[in-house]
Image (cartoon, rainbow, N blue to C red):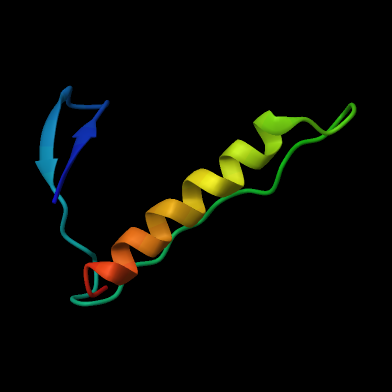
Length: 58
């Protein structure tokens, strides 16, 4: 699996720090006004990534 690294501006092969184990840190929403779909989008994005990685065996 590859991802785009914005720091180096190139595609990089994904490799977990610990073999077979992946962790994700996602800061909670910063809500200063009424909740909207943009807040849910962030949570949904990380959920989809986590599900995909579990499906891939991590």
